Image (cartoon, rainbow, N blue to C red; front, side, top):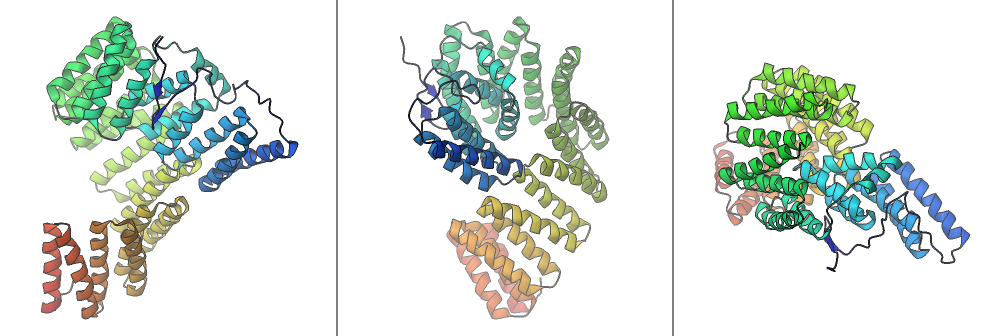
Length: 493
């Protein structure tokens, strides 16, 4: 027999065939443990889940890590899996996909890993969203049982190639992904696994599409489509039609794109697949939005929105509300944009997705800029900053501090602007981001220039210029030279 090894979504791990999944774990520790340790573990897990429900992800992670250490010490595998799941959930809430997948690698059974992997493949480019949906399913004990009943290929070795290919796909390394997809394809064909073959052909098509090898991409998509039709797999057929529609849309072959989207839509409606229907309506809405056919885009987005709300799919609802808001950006209707973005914000806050909450708050701040409401803009950015600080996301903190500095600059509060810019500068230097460091030096110089402290202005312009030359940023170098010349000629920004 071949040794069975599965590649994890993060690294390579050898798995036992015993499913490790809460709350199905039936293995119990037979080691002698003290009641106090077990009681402390229970309290930590309870505390961790409460912190999770309260949206306190950083605190929850620390609590679950303590629980994990005790669970390992007393050899309680059920509680160990519970702690891993808590960590995975909070890392996902923070948008840290790699960390979340590393936790899943510790406690999912091989079959359940394969389910997650297949979900990721079916939603390429949406790894975080897919994990979030997977977690919702894991909250149901009934779904655990359903997962373990899923039939998979008799040769688990092919899972390693699948999982490795996803790893490279999500890191935007399509050439490396192709290597593993092709190995998986050989094994699926060896075992006459037509479903696995079709999914892999779709993956290869997507990789070639990323490489802009259009003929190869279309060839593999069509091979997948043929198999799905042979298998009467209507869902796989519709998903592949959507892939081809997106492929033609990227090539700006609009009639072909719309044709394939509509074929997918017909299938979803025929088989009453409301989720697939909504997703395809969003695809078509995005297609029209890219063509700046805004009324058509709104029509399809609103149809999708109705379905998401009927299905109580809050995630799909929020994403579609944001899509609609972006159409109103193109229509130059900022009040409408704000109305839809505020609805998105409410949902992300309700679902406790801080990364998405911060991003939509930043978009709301940009709307207030166009509405010339600097105080509201400032309030939005300060909320964003608070979230990034809680999540310890240094780069995002620095970007937001620059946003705040620009608002204070427009409010003619130079000292507050300088304070924010200096904080941002410190972070960029800490992260060794030379380009952003130069940008912030220039922001500081602009403030000093505006208050006639010209020597200070020149000092910071020179530092920006020095970095531009160091990193060979010629356009940036030109603008810095122009600004320095403006100081000497008495021109104000």
